[in-house]
Amino acid sequence: MAHATIYVGFTVPQLLRGASRIFPTHSALVVLRHSAFCYCTANSTIKSKRKMDHLERTANNFRQEVISQAKVCGITNESETVKRLRLAIANKDFTFKAGQWVDFFIPGVSVVGGFSICSSPGLLEREGILELAVKYTDHPPAHWIHTECTLDSEVALRVGGDFFFDPQPGDSPVKLVLIAGGVGINPLFSILLHIADLHGYQEGKGNGYKMGTVKLCYSAKNTSELLFKKNILGLMNAFPGKITCRFHVTQQSSQICKELQPHVTEGRISEKDLEKHVSKDTLWYICGPPPMIETISKLLSNIGVPRNCVFFEKWW
Image (cartoon, rainbow, N blue to C red; front, side, top):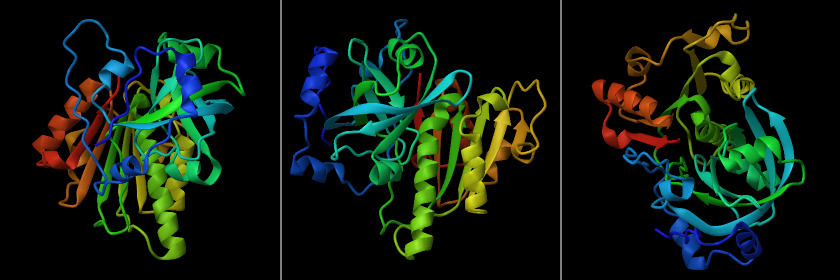
């Protein structure tokens, strides 16, 4: 598998100047187009007290060779603490698989950010647009997005990550259970949107990959922190029986709106919630804080889910 060099010793302006010159060779593209459609990211628990940065933490993950300049063309508040960015991508060779992340290079900021993509590959193909949803923290890239980023701000992006869903037309149909905690919804929402595109293509063209059912289990403190909830309800309505969702809230203090009430459970995701979806053709994708992933992984082991059917992304 091809890996791009990690440019730890380079400054951001150097990266931006070099971005237009970095294109994948034909052989690299062949390597990227592998037949497997999912990989497991098994990040080990950090033992050092020093918090590793994004480049260190993902040094062994796959990275594309292409670095593309991008311009911010939309900024909205997805919640009180999360901003959603729309980015126009300049490089036509820039691609990604649903579930992957980007290295986020900001001129004048020495720290490289790492953010999961929350839009579908189809949106990039159709409109040249990629979306990120970033929670406010003091980490320099996230802080810049929340305090300095404006329309027409320019950045550079490089795709990476071994956590994705990219079925090919000849692959056997599978069912998916997507389990998200907090902002861990980002890569899983990308996968959900990609699945919606696959369903739409299948219904419109009558060919392509035939997707099985998808169940999203999404946990947050309260309904105000459930990102993309209106979009998710829209997907459920557009593909009844094919895409379903259960929201879980653990610290809800206000009344839940009528639109969400039928789909909300108060309390954490439990073994009982998961065991009804166990089958030999089901794959399980998990993304959230490490403790949540460890808990869910144990629950899945308890109900007999094989390890090779569980894929996860730990995000700090």
